[in-house]
Image 1 (tube, rainbow, N blue to C red):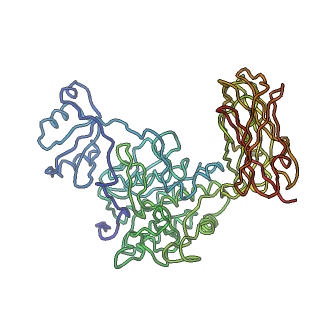
Image 2 (cartoon, one colour):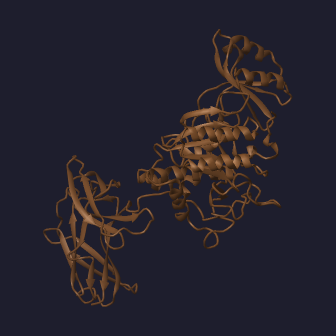
Image 3 (cartoon, rainbow, N blue to C red):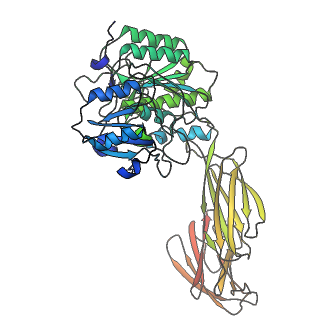
Length: 579
């Protein structure tokens, strides 16, 4: 029985601008003498554009002797080559280059804008990473790639029994879902989800309807939790719809790309995105606008990042692709996080949570352009995050330092009444511990009165009751000449008309008090009036002025008081409030 080829139907729903967004990581050209050494070599052999020996390529594919990769009109083969094959390639005028098939990776891990936009890091902080959730990727195959862990795979296409990707699309999709969270490459939405690779499309991105149906049935038998299909057809198929219905009846959530016809005369969704049981996904760009190519219509359920998405690709490399093909796996990854967060919820309940937590980015409520809105990863709403600021990072002996900590929920709303522990590690290694609590604005201020010990002080700040931590440090430097120790005798907030003293102490480089030194005081009032005074240090090195006596505190607002001696000065602020 002749198979029905979905050439008129199956379209990989991505846009592939090779000239702008994609590049292979360079590898050195191999010299001929280094190849003819009696050993087998893992190589990539690229052919000239004039090479059209499709019979040889087909023979290699059928025998699974080498991997054949075609892209943008060019052809290459990779694999472990024997000496006789290498010698033949070196003599072949159609061979453009021969390269070592070496492992390459980014120098550091990159978190793509899409992963950040759906707030996947919030889920990770809440210990949701997709662990134990099975996601089947029905595509051109997956990998091999060091960033993507394929638990199990199968090929439904006729020319190979390998689920290895010979196009690149499937590997890109799998990376968006579950690229590892390590120190290199990129990271997926659900980095600990389990990828099941189902090769149903060939190296050109075409496939048979029967192979796709067999792939769905295989995924059902493997008891996967989620199926991702980033392809579409304009032709409806009752058989495909029935297979999808069987999958959903078995508790599997089916995520499908909406289509890339949004800017055409027929902008509606493709099949199988039009089928009722699936979750149909459109694309948005970095500005949260519908991507111009993204198909839309009443069947659209959600949107996710799909414009210029960086993910894994062939040869252990990385590429930026655009399309609803890239948006759908963001949703598949998000569902994996939800499944881990709510392990006892049914597929239908998880789908409703997905819709209910989406951020409305279009017209109020569900609409044809954005569906229910932009997906948002699940997280523990009680989790907090800490940011810290120092009043000054470098001090002199005996100077105080104010350590201000802002405590916010992951939604960035202030978290009041959160207990904090400050652990100060002295230059000697001795530790001192203090506690504080955030106010109604989520702020906590801890003032550390430094000692005379010169060196670096590390401050570790932790939120009591959870594992949120941050740290900072400040340095106490050895003075090179006389300096000032400057402080208020009362709180930095006083009532209008109340008296308070400002004291400056003059010390030498060995921290000894200096008497008979003139200290200049300058006060700037809330109305920017400048008042000047001076005083002489006593035998203890101290000189004081009294605010309200020397400086009238007759208006509410902030007063700035500066004490100076020689080329050294300090400024304090004082907030005066109404009685």
